[in-house]
Length: 368
Ligand SMILES: [Ca+2]
Image 1 (cartoon, protein in one colour):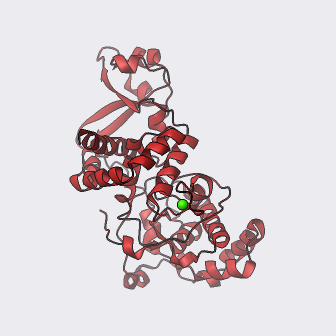
Image 2: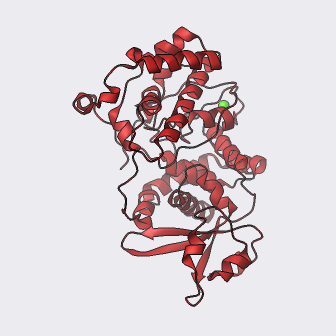
Image 3: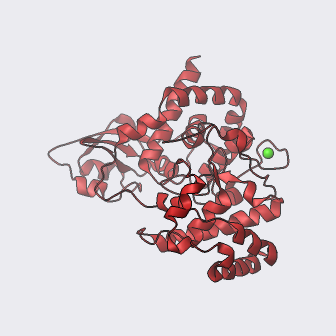
């Protein structure tokens, strides 16, 4: 599902002196194969048929954005006007067909594989002291940081080939109306486009030189522009933030993101769970989804049986269901730290893949 070998083609402008913004990682992401230019015309929906420079709604938003953000009006309008509509980017945003069973086994096999583990071992060994420093400063252990960067981009090997301007403009102005949360998602991407233009203007970057995922996520950690603005750090202290070339900046930024979203140092991510068939109330257990809601006493009352470590956990818990296609689902009990991982990408499958990849790499590194 993922194509790579583009890292040499990709660089992003250097961001320095970053300011504020919303911090949200786009959910349900993952890099997809790009669409050749020549197929665009045939599938061009009416919505995106006019160049953005000729769209009064886009030009009005450019003027509004320039005023609110203190950007040069001509530069803002010209840049937004030059963005290209990418019809397939909009399509990639649509949720999978209803009724399609998720499959943790399949999902896991995409991320916990020898190539990614091998790349993770090399990344860990090359950056061991930086990972240790990030744990000291932010309280986030190396295996979580290593798990994130591996799941996101195989340690920078696949950071995305879309021009971020095109992806963000498409999602900001032509978000597919058939999406159940189209209005909210479109607003989210408009904000990200604003953040991106602000970053480019402030850092002196060339907006069309920046490549990323179809959702506009950038660099080794696939940060959205708002996350760069709010959470990226210059962890190698060279005076600029570079999430494409500086492993240290990436490590510090990921750890800082986790700290901001409530990571508790030293606390586990999840526990194993069994069920008491006589008393289990799955509807009640699954109702809060991934939000840690239950005390250990409550979750046990609802028929979930924890081991000794789970019983001793002081915080709130959530029952996490991992569907296995046609097979019976698997379950774990997630802690607040599990929930924090899902703030990076809103999926329990994603969080589990991050945890398991990090553990797989850690066990190899620590055996050596
Ligand atoms: Ca730096």
